[in-house]
Structures are given as C-alpha cells and as structure tokens.
Length: 223
Length: 251
Ligand SMILES: Nc1ncnc2c1ncn2[C@@H]1O[C@H](COP(=O)(O)OP(=O)(O)OP(=O)(O)O)[C@@H](O)[C@H]1O
Ligand SMILES: [Mg+2]
Image 1 (cartoon, rainbow over the protein chains, first blue to last red):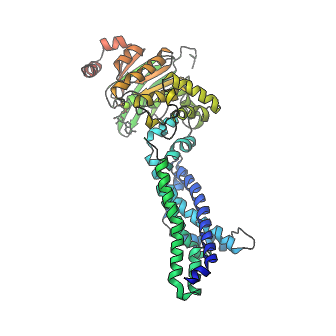
Image 2: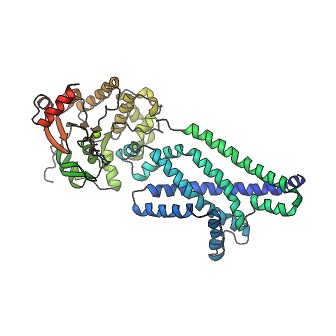
Image 3: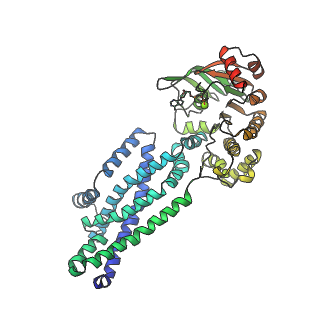
C-alpha cells in the first residue's frame, strides 16, 4: 500500500499520459473514421474500394502489430520524427498514429451501421431538394446516424482507453508500462500496485460509459 | 429544339425504358407535362407510377429514351443534377421530413444550403409557407410530434421553399388516416389553382376530378390511356381502365 502512496506522482503522471493518448487518438479516430465511412458509402467505386481495403486490413490486424509497425516501420526504418531530440515525443505520436489508424476502422464500421438505420427516404428527400451527395451525408444522414450509434461509440472510446496500454510495446510510459516498472521496484507490493492501476482505469472508463449512455438517450431521434 | 416558346412542355419523356433486373418497369413511355398543367397518374399497384415520378428528377436512372426538363436533357450527375432537382419538388408517400430538424429547419435547409439564401430571409419565407399550409404554430417542433397530415403539409412547404418549376407527388395521402386526407388535398388543390405544374400519383378520384387537367392511366409499365378527367372517369376507353375503375369505385 505504501508503494502506491509513495509512487502516486509517477502513477498519476502515467495516467495523464494514458488520458492524452486516449483523447488525441480518440479525436483523430472520430474524424478519420467519419472520412472512411463517407468513402465507403460514396457513389465513387474507387473511394468505396479504398475504404473497404483499409478497414479490412486495419480491423483484422492485431493492435500490437499496428503499433509496432508504427514504432519500427515509421519510426526506425522511415525515420519519421516529431521532435528533434525527445524520443518520448516521437513515441507518443507514433503510437497515436497506430491507435488512430486502428480505432478509426472500427469507428467507420460503427458509423456505417448507424447510416444503415437512417431510412433511405431521408437521403432521397435531401437529394430531391437539390443537396449534393456530400451535403446529404453531412447535413441529413450522418447527424442521424451518429445519434443512433452514440452508445457503441462510447464502447469504442472505452476500448481505446484500454488499448493505449499497447503503446507500452514501443516504450510509451503510460499506465501499463509504469505498472510493470513499479512491480520490478516494489516486488512485495504487487497486489496493491495492481489494484491501484486497475482502479485507475475504472475511474477513467466508467464515467465514459455512463456519459455516453446518458448522451445516447438524450440525442435519440424520434421517428 | 426549335419549339422553345411558352407552349413547349416543361417535361417531356420520349421512349423511356426502365428495368429493375429482369423486371421491365417502364415500357417505351412517352409523356409530356405542360407548364401549369396538373397531371394525375392512376393505375394498379406495381404498374410503374412511382418509378415514372422518380425518373423525372432522376432518383431513378433510365435505361433508354430521353427525358427533357425545361428544354434541356436531364443531367447525369453532380452539381448540374443537384440544380435540376432543386427545380423539381418531390412529395413522398411517407413524408420523409428530416427527423433531426425542426419543422422550420426542414423548410429552410434547401434554400440556405442550395440557394445560399441568407438565414433570416429563408426563415421569413419559410414561416410564410408554413402559414400557407396551416402549420406556422408548429414551426419549432420536430416532425415526430406532428400528425401525418401536418407532416405532409410541411413536406409540401419544404418543396415550395425551393420555388420549384414543378412538383411531383407520389401517393401523398396514401399513408394518412382518412380524416387527414382532405387537409392535404386542400393544399394541393390550392397549388393547382395557383398554376403550379404538378404530376400527382393518387387514387383520390375527387381530387383528380376537381384539380387535374389530364388523367394518365398506367398499367404494366405502359401508359394505357389518357384524357381529361370528366371524359376518363365517365367513359374510359380501355378495358383495363374500366376494370380498374370499377374496382376502386366499388369501395
Ligand atoms: N428499387 C427497386 N428494385 C427492384 N424492383 C423495384 C424497385 N422499385 C420498384 N420495383 C418494382 O417495379 C415495379 C413498379 O414499381 P412502382 O413502385 O413504380 O409501381 P407503382 O405503380 O408505384 O405501384 P404502387 O401502387 O404499389 O406504389 C414493381 O413491380 C416493383 O416491385
Ligand atoms: Mg408507388
């Protein structure tokens, strides 16, 4: 127990990194996932095909591989850098790219299932007043689709929060990596340290679930 | 075209064919609708009436033939097609009001986004139109809070907000409870009287007699017969039409 109290600053710092990874990757995933969903329902076969290939590859590759690819492939081999001297900044952004690339594939599919709940007549009415395809999607279809999938998007965000632990694979000092370090330093306090981190994740994820459940009920579209 | 005067039809379909897979839904259809004319399309279920409506604003593409609107062939896609659609209003059987938007927003979306009309001006005009169809007091509500008849009147206002050259109606009263049919037909009759060009798929014979300039009887993807309402309803020329009329008039 003492170890948890003594190391609290380190633990909090680690969770702060977890939060940053989650929020940044979450925002990028939502934006990129929406673009992918738009591609997959677009009338242009090229865009549809590209979207389908992307989603199927990323969705079916283990996240660890995606993150390691970003760390080794982009970081080491292609020498992509985000900071001249700070390796931890590089690793943060490389793992963010990996997390976003992976999560956006799921966001895309959730949004697509939302789009399928919007009656076809909504898009027909939009087209018949002269809205173009992008306008129809942006102004009529997506706003209704998103409202239908708020709860599953919340689940994705929870999964993303937990998935940030995989960034440890390329040395990002988020919660999971710190926990392992603390295990090594305080061998007799493994259980309290473990419980501390477990509670930490619950504190992050439980409110997200509650918030999105509440939001889903609030924004539901009455038909 | 040589004939571009005011007498040229607004819509002209020539030799139009449409298939859904193996199903031949429109068979060599020729039809013109003049400016200010009200054409009622009737016929048995599955005869292609909805499809006929939907090819005019290209919600359905055609396999062969030509369709011209206001002297120009229908554009195939993109902005030109969107512009054409903004000139042809459409009112659906199931209303299709935008569920996530208020009644007023439903009416102003097209003008603000397609015509780039300033919001205030679009809202003023929107309220006028809602006034005209008798829904102004509901402007802030969402579609699901309105009755079917009210929703359909809003849908008509939404179409009118684009100042269309023509409005297509696909069975606008078929999804309504009987007591709400008349309120929608009244609005439509008003439009017809004001000179709106209309193509109306309906089984409301009262409306057809009162408002239509011409009745088109359609069955099995073909226009079997057409004529002025009084003539058509009292002395249909074809066996199919006689048969159909006896069925719908008997109940
Ligand atoms: N999208 C579609 N895909 C396949 N078949 C279709 C499609 N739309 C219509 N059809 C078929 O085409 C035929 C004509 O349909 P249409 O809706 O134009 O008839 P209708 O005269 O409007 O009938 P109703 O009175 O039932 O509305 C029908 O057999 C219908 O099943
Ligand atoms: Mg129909």
